[in-house]
Length: 353
Ligand SMILES: NC(=O)c1ccc[n+]([C@@H]2O[C@H](COP(=O)([O-])OP(=O)(O)OC[C@H]3O[C@@H](n4cnc5c(N)ncnc54)[C@H](O)[C@@H]3O)[C@@H](O)[C@H]2O)c1
Image 1 (cartoon, rainbow, N blue to C red):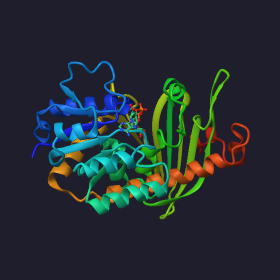
Image 2: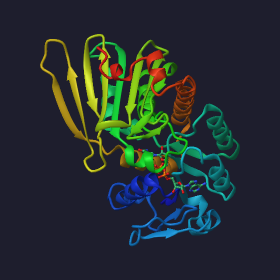
Image 3: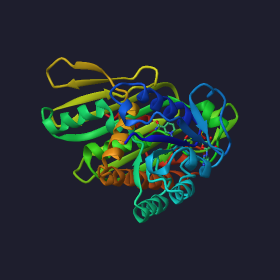
């Protein structure tokens, strides 16, 4: 079967990431057989955003209309709503007969909601994939091989630094978000994939300040995770940084590796530098369009009826860990940045060692 596409939630993820990726995959010889030729169906209670004319899409005014335009049995639903609006549209879509869901990250903002979504999935037999494109990134695959291969010894420490100026979107919709849910789901999912399950050791978050405007908990967020096998992960995401960077460093008993995930959709290339003691560092650059690969992979797995449980379990853990980080990172909040002093300076995390 060729699968159809329904995108629910037409914000920046729905129209800026999912729609162009599906369009690109439909136009690519290797992936086009996965996709039906019928128009991509879109739904958002706010209607169609501007700039989509000529995209060959069909707008559904309601979810019921969406089910008429895209037969639920042949359709993958891309749920691109904010994390606070997942359970309700999922229930409605499931009641209309939709079964295959590609859900944006994070699955939920707390463990309890993530579990309710998981219960709904199991009760109704839904097939669900959470968008975690770094898991399908070529860089992550190379890191997995590096760990498995053992040339650098045993993995001891993972450090992620995710820098991005995200002022405009934050100021436009200050909402309920915290910096824990924006970029950290990417790195935490990779950490769990590379080093196994973990518990939260520390968490902290600062505010975003622009002139006199303060957006609570939308500055820099960091978590420290202790993995079951002894590896420690430190991940920092600074949404007030002046530049973009998505860096990962792996410290092994016998060397280091530094990777850079692609920082923008316009140029999907990643890099990896491996440093063995006493040898010149070797840097490799390679194409890494992880969202396209992830999306095509999800359609393939839906079509072939693959077992999706292991990846979903990992994403449930990501939601639980970041939910706990949000609770712990935000409760002790007195003056802006106060918990940073009580915890660990964010700036020090990215440059440890
Ligand atoms: N994977 C990635 O790289 C990536 C990148 C950006 C955003 N995201 C994720 O995508 C999700 C959406 O983020 P965004 O930046 O697009 O948000 P956004 O606020 O720009 O857009 C959300 C849209 O969902 C719509 N919506 C709200 N409730 C709805 C409902 N019940 N039914 C249908 N539509 C509804 C809103 O009207 C809005 O248009 C978030 O979970 C975010 O973390 C992921």
